[in-house]
Length: 72
Image 1 (tube, rainbow, N blue to C red):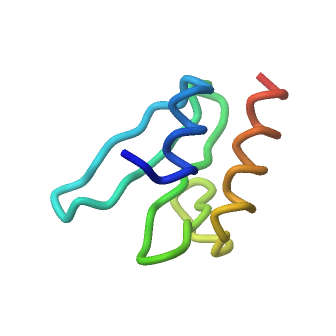
Image 2 (cartoon, rainbow, N blue to C red):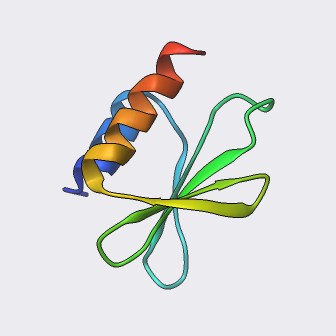
């Protein structure tokens, strides 16, 4: 697992799960948070309440995770 987003998620103790196609999903450890990050080819899709919202670059996804970790 060498992807910077996954490494950051693990360091922040966010749950990371790999699907059958080998793509990763990161979720919040907080049950009140309704967001998920889904890995695509070179981007991460941010979904809120299972509705895709925006495609994030690696740097944007890492920044999002750091922001979410501060709010926990």
